[in-house]
Image (cartoon, rainbow, N blue to C red; front, side, top):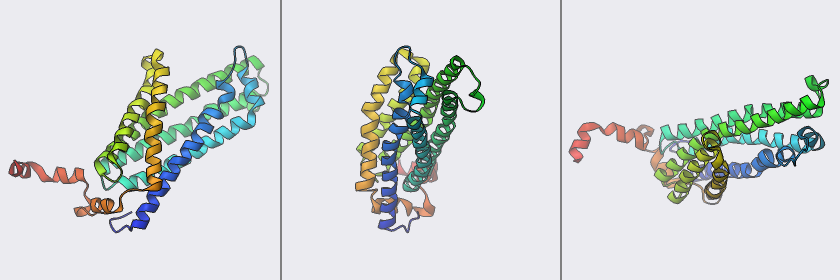
Length: 262
């Protein structure tokens, strides 16, 4: 997208970004919650190996949903960069890179699920392994998977913070949504860090994410789909001299200009 972008192309990009964001709202619960429910909803004394083996198709469907989330995250990172690049190239690049980093870690975090599935179904190197040993592998793999979620939550929290700052500064989308995103980023940071530094507060952090993140990200996605970014404002930002952003313009003023202004 360039300064000569038409209203239609800007709206199309906005709508595509919003629709992809909405798709994550559908796929993420299937991948991270429903697909893993055979293990996360175990009762006292129940076998994780047996639970996965009995719900193999659901577990596989959840993994497929996670693959879909990874693909969408990477595309969405590029679309959001295109939408918010005229506001601040540095912030927009930071938002894109942190979202891409989150997606890469999510992709790597599929490995524990593959290991757990293989161990639970007794395939590959686990074919001759005793049931008790396979159970240990499944439980260890799923614990590693949970740790992986905490890790990718950190770059995602940074992404949501950068995105919120871009929205607040841009006037492309209502600033209120930007402030909601900034608050949501704090919830994401707490959710990832609490189990590491304050395990007793992990439950509170999870609840805080639900309260802050869902309204913020859902309102952002709905706005992009229904309204989109403001085309006139986008073109005004993109038409700055040499494609400069507000950051570049502020830096170019220099001490002499500031003294005159004083």
